[in-house]
Image (cartoon, rainbow, N blue to C red; front, top):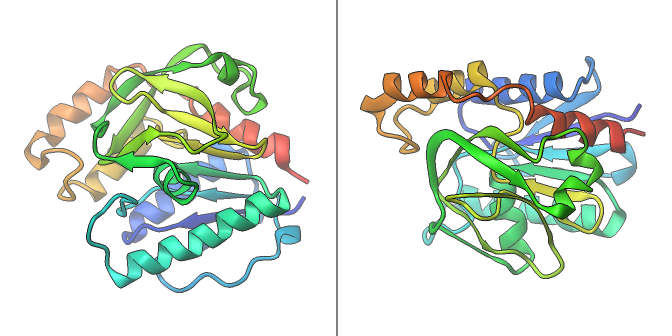
Length: 242
């Protein structure tokens, strides 16, 4: 099997490792079946789409809708935009987790802003009719709980995008472009342990009030998030592995 490529943009080594391990576990990928590049550390090299089964873009500290951007952020956006263009042109499967919504939406002409931001929490996700029929969401219940935490969200999907899931506070929780490019606002790679670890890393990064950490952890423990969101990663891998 050709490996899947994990592209991370996180500055914190612990968060990068946790994200990689979670994607590998939920995707049921063995050693060597998931490889890794850190987009925030250096320009991404040209990619040959024939080398990979697909690409998984993780979340991170950048927001596509930021009014002021560092040179690093602009370079990462350009690199990932190039990867997205490659995926669309060559039929290379791609899924973006959380930050992927902002990346795909903005790059393809939709609108992403802070209207529907969500603090670190568990929310109910509801599949649309298209989501219920999408093979990457096969076996996922019509409604399920998942973890979120984002400062921006999609307010208008790109032309031609197909909405797959919605939420109460954030209307667009997942969509697809063509038949092989996906974006989720919620985190399919996060279970309770993964969330707590990530909250510890980002405790002072503005995703939630730092002094509410213990309270938010206790709420998360009782929120009913199980391994259901991870089915999406498993399905993505099984559908597109080659």
